[in-house]
Length: 274
Image 1 (tube, helix red, strand yellow):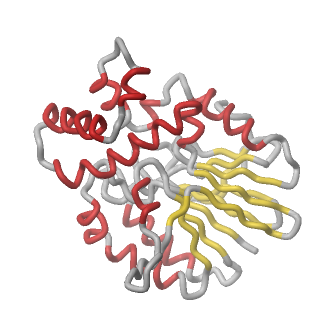
Image 2 (spheres, rainbow, N blue to C red):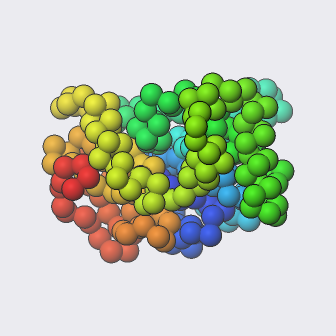
């Protein structure tokens, strides 16, 4: 097996380096060794763009993926920004979704297991179950409120969350400005995770558990790295604010490698948050 992994493309957001990602997809068709391609969450940004618009505007990207799927197995994991895509299942004969999204993925390569999670699980920690309600709501409200004034938009977000039985979360946030907290979710991870990246990556280490025959691969933080033990990989992102961006991982025979598209391999290995 040769598996390539990319995450956090954020199609539909102004920050997405869409042209580079499309060039990357074209280049993958020339790789005759490639067997599996994993899109590891936040493929589209349903928090910042209505769902119909993001797919119509990025039809060329979808067609490139369909072409790639003729020769390569494609796998899609949902992230926090496209969490709603977990509902798109071919459960009836009249459903013809070309791609199906799942919350996590495991692939076996001989004696090695590759485990894929988007990574928002590590940011939200104990609150992950409650945050599922938030992620689902934010994927919905954009379609109904695009173009609203900012304050009205965030009032609508909070109203929607309340309608989705968000009382358990709001009780845990007593004494805080709920709209301020909701707005913080829309900040990029470079801002939102400032001072919290070490804790997020610590939870990733705990999830990996030190197994020598398993590699944990995640994204979400836009902070690409391979750890010194080479059993944890963060795939980075394709948003221009991240440094570096346009990054992806390659997995072969239990060996992870990290690349910046058009710039070559990242050879550094480090401990999380260094």
